[in-house]
Length: 408
Image 1 (spheres, rainbow, N blue to C red):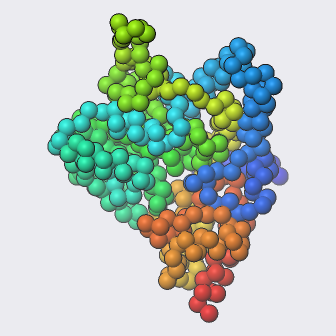
Image 2 (image 1 turned 90 degrees about the vertical axis):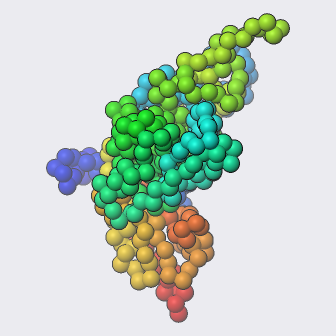
Image 3 (image 1 turned 45 degrees about the horizontal axis):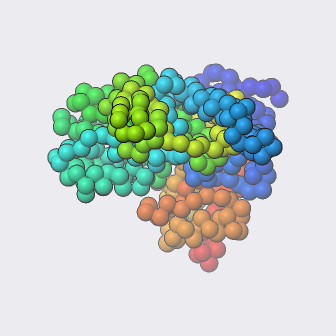
């Protein structure tokens, strides 16, 4: 088989052999059908090897010996640069975090709020974005407006809902690029444009988009974008990144501070100058060398796969899974079916069944690892580029048997 095959658009897409080579370096795929990268992706072998290598280096040499410390500083900067390259931004606009939630909170808590300020968000947000918005209301009297996108709509119709909500006086728009609960892809560039027209800023939860979609934050003029390494990027837990547009860094106050938040200070209380323009002001102290080494390997693994090719593969498998699920009696797919709004997240309901019981039975009895979205009473499958059409068929057959058994 050749290394590439013609795609529907006439371009040459990577072949099954190409994706099989990546899959062979992800051991979990030989033990189960892993449809849960939207929660936490399975670690590729190069990621684990990088973690172990760095950990052993620190173990053998000592974590604070000069050479090991110098390596850690260089490693941190390389990872920051890798994140920046993948989102089409400059490294000076990126700070490393623990996860998406930390990045979201840095922005929301770092803005100045007054009673009567308005935030626009959606009814499809993860709690990590939604709960901070509620706290703005409780602490500062901020008003929240909620857009309710319909997954069956075209992007233009969804955008119209945002146009109606984002009016003069709105301070911040808080949205997920891809909804964790439906898989809906929002028209981000157009939403950003609308927000900027009325003087608002946009904070994006990129937990489900980083590693699913090729990102170009600079050309989209995004203001703030928070991402993790442990989901679609297949990195370890505990590392993420926050992008802040360069001209907005100085206006965002760090609420949790350490040495990098000071331009200068004295130890006797005689002088202090806060840091304003350097995104390092959001950086705290100790970071894990082994975890950073794992993230470096994960980002390289993703770059090797190719963001555009990976995104096409993920969406294609998502469409195949949704098509197959729609043919199962008693199953209702609640994810988008339009090509411009769908992703690799496929969510569905099973008639008269509680979602957790379905997800648990699929894993326990059939080895299909997935998650339940309790607030929507849906089961969510995350298609990744390492998934296969055979796995989709097997998982759908398992679900069909499960539904049939519950009706007998």
